[in-house]
Picture 1 (tube, rainbow, N blue to C red):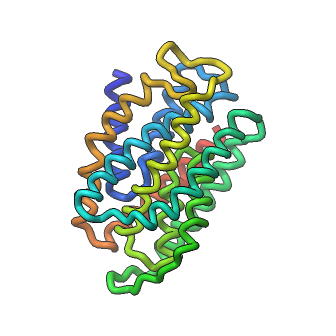
Picture 2 (cartoon, rainbow, N blue to C red):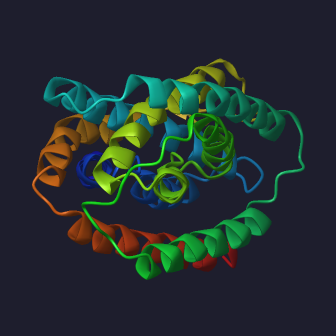
Length: 267
């Protein structure tokens, strides 16, 4: 029953990742929070287990969706690399600091991040959407976006897309579909870097016999299986929608993420 629920969560998260380019972490973090609390992981270790396994599943969401975009000719390698490289570096540094030291307070971060999301939610609703707006080239800005997105990804397990896409939109006036495609290309680089780190890091207490580092294969693999199946369908569906519809859907996801984070910070 647990495996089935994890696969269904992977299907939903994968579809959401392909549709909006956010990586699916909003689903994975919620489900993994329930799973690791139920399996008795200590309060000190549970943020690390949640983040690492969410990121592991997010890797497959981004990779599967990006393969679909490459085949459809909607992959933007230059922008992806400019964003991904600095973001991957900062994400691994932060992941190391979380496992090596006890400074990380999930409650403080979730409150801050929730209000950050609400700000982007407000900006997204306020900004008028037009399919004829001229795109503004801002090469250096992608690296700054990568740093911030990598920071958010490593601290939350959400993949970074919820920050990356609105920032790309604000910086370059780029269409949401293109910004989402770039986000889906960047997310696997972030996630692969952190997944390798967490696979090689020895936790304070091993979860079970199927745990490799901080990655619990009993939880992560069913999520990944659902993701691989559903993510390409999300990408295909997104290509048929207008910017206005995607904007509304993205705003709804922002609202859910913010409320979920605020609620979880007080648990």
